[in-house]
Image 1 (cartoon, rainbow, N blue to C red):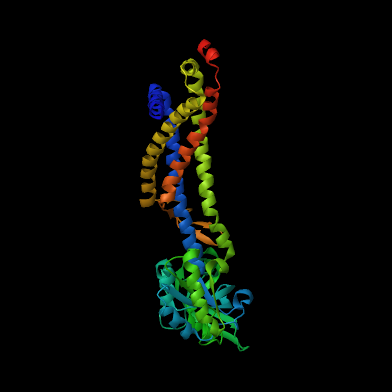
Image 2 (tube, helix red, strand yellow):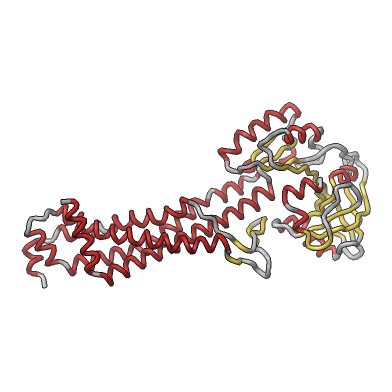
Amino acid sequence: MGSSLTSMAWRNVQRQKRRSFLAALAMAMGVAVTMSLITWMAGMWDNMEVAMVDRLNGHFQISHPDYPATRQMFDAIEDVDTITAKLDANPDVTAYTVRMYGAALLGSDERTEGASLLGIIPSSESRFQDMDERITRGAWLPDEPGPQVVLGSGLAKRLKIDVGDELVAVSQAADGSLGNELYTVTGIIHTDLPQMDRTVAYIHLQTLSELLALEGRAHEIIALTPDRQMDALTPIVADIHDQVAPAGLVARPWWEVDPAALQLMSMRGVQEWITTLLFLGASVIGVINTMLMAVMERTREFGVLRALGMRKREIIQLVVAESSFLGLIAAVAGGILGGLISWYLVVHGIDMSVGGKGWEMGTVTIDPIIHGKMTLRGFLLPAVILFGFCVLAALWPAWKAARLNPVDALRAE
C-alpha cells in the first residue's frame, strides 16, 4: 500500500500544476534567499574574526602575568630572544610579533596630542598584519632602528602633520628620567582598527626601548597559528605556556585576552538559525495554506477514499506525502538557485563601503567588500529544515482530512 500511496500523492501534486508550482516556487525562493544570506554572513563573520582576532589580538599572547591588568611598563618580558627562539622552533607558530607599549606627548609645529607609542620590529609586524600594504602615504618603517615614526591616519590628522615632517615625543622613562626625542614621520597608515589609527604612533622596538630605558625587554609577544578555533588552539597554547612558565611568563589564547570577542563570535550559529527559521517559516505558511485548500477542495474525494476502505492513517500519509513532494522539489530547485547566488557572493562579494571605506563595528573596521563563504552546513541547513517544515506543516491539514465523516464528505458540493 505504501507505493500506491506514493504514486497517488505524486499524481495529486501534478493534478494541480499551477498551485503546486506557485507553492514550490515560494518555498524554493525561501531556500535560495536563506542559503545566500548564510553564505554572505559566513563571509562577514570570517572577516570580523580576522579583524578582531588575527589582526588585533593574535591567536595567543605571551606576557608578564601582571601586565594585562596593570599595563605597567615595569611588568615586561625580560629575555625576549630566548622566548622568540622557542617560537621559531615551534612548527605550530606561523607568525609572531614583539611589541612594547608606551605613553607619550607628541608635538608638531601646530598641535600637541597624547598618544600611545607602539614599539615593533617592522619586518615581523608587517608579516603579522601586512602593515606595509596599509600605508596610505610615505613608507613603512625600515628594519634598522632610527628616529623614524609612522602615524595612524587619525593621529596624523589631529597633529596636522604629514610625511617628512618632524615631531617631538616626551615620555616618562622606566628609570625615572624624562625621555624625549625628535622623530621624522616616514609614513601614514590606515588599518582595520579605528581606535589605533586615532591614537597610535609606530616606532622601532629598539628605538622605543631606548626612549623608555627598557633595553632588551618587551611587553607582549603576539602570535598566529594555522587555526584560531578553540579545540585546535588550546593544546598549542598549553604547550607554549609550559615552555614560558619557567621564565615567569604566561601564554593566553585570544578568548582569554578578549572575552568580548568570544561572546560576539558565539552569536554566529545563533544568527544562522534565526535567519533560517524566519525566512523558511514564512515559506511554510504557504505550505499550510496550500494543503488546507487542497483538503477543502477534495472533501468528496476523501469521502470516496474513506468509503472504499482507506483508513485514517493512510489519509494522513497521503496528504503528508503530497506536502513532502512539494518540499523536495522546492529544496532541490532552491538549492540550485541558492548555489548560483552563493557562488556570485563568494567570487564578487557585496560592496558595503561607507564613503569608500569599510564600516566600523566596535573597535574594528570590516573590509568594504564582503565575500561570501560557502559551507556544507550553509548549503544543507535550509533544504533540510524546509523539508522538515513541509512534513510538519502538512500534519494539521492531514488530520482534518482524516477526521472527515465519509457520509458528510460524500454529500459535500
